[in-house]
Image (cartoon, rainbow, N blue to C red):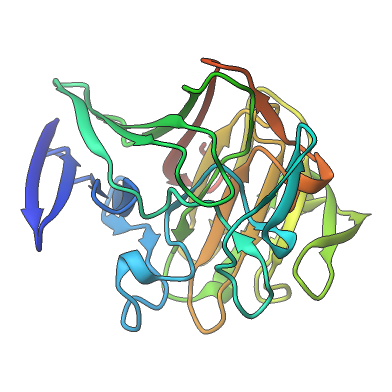
Length: 316
C-alpha cells in the first residue's frame, strides 16, 4: 500500500492506493478531511464509488449539499438555530436560509492537519486532526476531532470519527457522515436495503413531525422512491446497509454499529445519479428534542467507525 501527500491550489490532499489492484481513496485534509474519491474493485474492474453532486456549480468548500461532509457537533438541522443546554439558551447562525435552520454543524469545511500516517503491505492508514477553540457563535464548547482513514489490501475502507470534549464543562454532541455514492450511471437500477424500524416524516422546516413504521430490509427500489428521510435503525453491534445494482450484479456495503449510529439518512438529490447514505448518532433537531443527543463530560471521547467495501450481490 502507498500513501501520497501533495498540494493542489493550496489544499492538502492525501491518496492511499494499492498499486496492485489500482484501488484508492483520496482525502482533502484542508476541507473537512473530506473523502473526495473512492475507487474499489469488483475483481474485474475498478469503479469510482464517491459522487460529488453539483460539482460543476459549486466548489467543494461552498457546496451546500455537504458531499462526504463530517457532521459535527450536530447533525442535520437545529430548528431556527436555537437550543438550550444546562439551563442556558444559545443561538447558532442560520446557514439554511430557505428553511431558517442551522444545518450540519461547522466541521465539514474545517482545516485538518495530518498527525499520523502508516503504510505497509496490508494497509495504508492516515489520521487527521482539527482543534475547535469554542469561538463559533452559539457553541462555546471546545473540542478536538480526529478522522482516521484506512484502506487495506482486501479493498475495505475503514473510517473512524473521534470527538473529545477538551473543555471543563459538559457539552452537547452529535455526529455523522454525509457521503454520496454512485453504483453505475442510473439511479433507477439501484435497490437499497437496511435494517430499519421507523421512517420520520418532516414538517415544512424539514424537522421530524412524526414517525411511521418502515422496514427497509425488504428493499427500497430507487425507481419507486427517492428518499429524503431520517430512519431509526434496529440496534445491532454489526448493522449493514447494502446498495444493489441488479444490472451489474454489484453491491456496495456499509457496516457500522447501530448502537453507536442508531439513526440513518438516505437522500437522493434532484437530477443526480447518486444517493447519500448517512449514519448518524442522533435525529434532526436533537439539541431540542434530545433524540440521540450525547452529552460528553469534560475530557470524554466519542468513537464511531464505518466500513465500506464492494462485492458481488449476495457475496458480502
